[in-house]
Image (cartoon, rainbow, N blue to C red; front, side):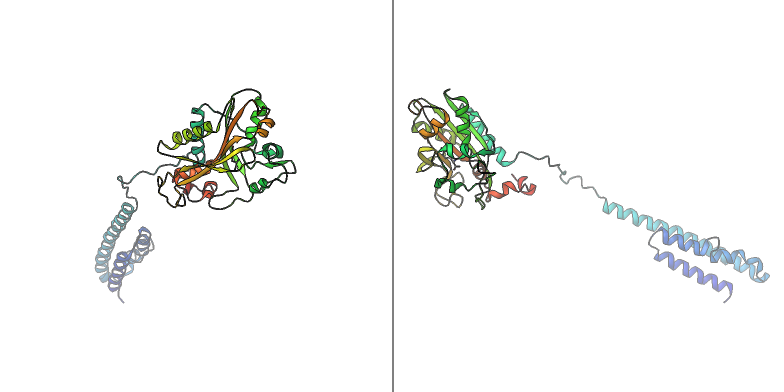
Length: 343
Ligand code: DAH
């Protein structure tokens, strides 16, 4: 093959490769191969002097022409891949200034905390002060002092976590009543709320958790009657949930009150006729109540002939579930932010 044909072939080859080149590296490889210091076209031009004199002019002319065409094609290929790259960036880095901003999640109060703060807010507004007791409680304060002696069947209802024979994770906030009375007796009036965490081994389903919150209330003074209890519960429920709610008191049994009652409030979800939240009864149980048992007053350092009192205890989780329509109490304790941030 003579040199002129070779140049034509090289031109063909180089232009094809440049057309297929995808990026700057591809193009540079083509340039080096044909026009670099050892490139095939460069070598031909450099070797013109060795050719027979009659071929030199033609080869020189075509060689330079091919070189020029290759240079142009390289330039063209470079701007083509450059433009392609720019387009891709434009596509990938589009900024939609109309899309809503992403907000940081700073956290917020837990639903139980919110419910508890509302309950305490109402009770403090009614003149009660906040008192707390230990979560690891003695058997006496948690049971015996509250009229639940060893072997009393009421202990079965509060299947407990015992630390040893004398210490138990409290199963209720009622021991706060005793602790406070013993601390201030014989001062009157006694008017406290006792919020806190309680523990029960057997509780574990959609409406029972082995760890949950209660809030206790205790009022002791001269001449306190069941009517005061009823009025207080009514006032409390309405301040907390609104004037339209109703309170229902059903006879019940607790060892530390006599008489004892179960306290229900009208269902805030359906407003009365019945729905799935209230099991079609129109009411929801929120806790227990009663007139403080004379023995408990005595244990607290008060004379049941002189004073009387009422107490009630409610489930805080139950209140939070009502407020936020939470179907399973265990959601409150799993600390899954996907759940918590919805509230
Ligand atoms: N401590 C009881 C419970 O855990 C609730 C309760 C009932 C509290 C009657 C009271 C009360 O103060 O008077 O089930």
